[in-house]
Image (cartoon, rainbow, N blue to C red; front, side):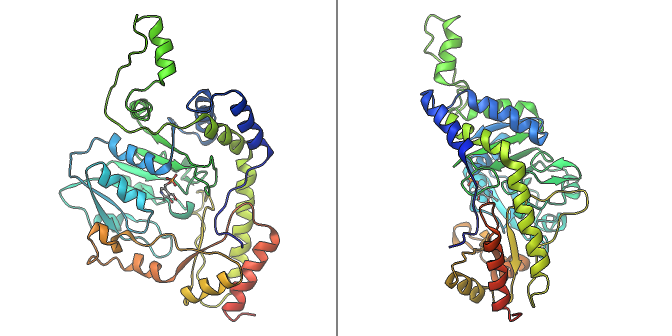
Length: 372
Ligand SMILES: Cc1ncc(COP(=O)(O)O)c(C=O)c1O
C-alpha cells in the first residue's frame, strides 16, 4: 500500500536514539536545549520551546494569550480538531469561518464575516504548507495564533510561517515534514511568552526536578522543594524525541527537496487530467512546505475507493469542524468548506515514496479520469 503521509528516518536517527538510551537519560534533558537552539537558527525564529505535541502546543498558545474567559476565537472550520479543542479547553468559544476554495486557506474577509464584540483572537492554519495571506489579517488588530503544523519550512514574504503572528505552533508527529515520533513546538513574538511556556510545560514548575534540586542545593537546605508558578498540565518533550529531531534537522533539506520533486511531478502530470483541480503554488517570494497535495475531483469518493483498490491510500484533511455535532454549529453554512468536504482529496506525498510510487499514483488517477 502506498501511504498518503509519511516520514523518513535512517541510521542517524537510530544512532542518536542509541546514544540517548546508553546515556540512561531518556526524559527531558539537554538534547531538548540543543534541538531548540538548532531549530531556532535553522528557521530564523526569535523564540522557541519544544513540547510534546502540536495539539498541546495549540492549547498552550491559546492559554498564553490570557484572553477573558468565554471569549470568541475565530478559526477555519476546515482544520484539524485540535485547533477547536485548544480553544474550548482554554475556556473560550470557537467560532468557525470559511476558507478560500483555491488556497483552502482562511482569508481576511472570511474572518471579518464572523467578527462580533466578543471576538478576542484569531487562529489561522497554513493549510498543506501554503502560507495564509497574513498582512490583512494582522491589520484587523486581534492577537493571531498561527497553526504552522503543516508549514515547517514555509515562508510568507520572507518570514517563517509560525513567527508572523503573536504565537505559532509546529507539529513533529509521525507523518510531519520533520518527525520525532510525537512532538511539537511553540514560538512567540514576545520572549516572555516563551519563558512562560518553558515553565508551563513542566506542570507550571519550570525546571525539571533534577535541575531545580541542583540549583536549590546551593541556596536552600531543603533543595527538593520547588516553586510552582501556575497550574498547567505536563507537556515535556524528551531527550529521546529531541535526539531524533536533531538527526531530522540534519536531513530536512533533502526531505524537503524530495517532497518538492513529487509535488512538481504531480503539478506537471496531473494538469491535463480532465475535471481535476490541482493545488495552487506558493505566491512569488513565499515558500511552500509541500506537506499535503490536496486535489479536487468531481467523483471524489469513487476515485478514493478506486485508488484504495489499487493499493493507494488517500484521505481528506479535514472534515469541517462546524459539521461536527460536538460544536453545535451544524446549522451554519460555510459553502467553500462544504464543497471541499465533498470533492477534496489528499493524495500521497512523502519522502519515502519511490519514483515508481509517484508514477503509479499518476497512472491510476489518469485511468480513473478517463485520460488513458
Ligand atoms: C493543522 C494541524 N494542527 C495541529 C495538529 C496537531 O499536531 P500533533 O499531531 O503534533 O498533535 C495537526 C496534526 O495533524 C494538524 O494537522
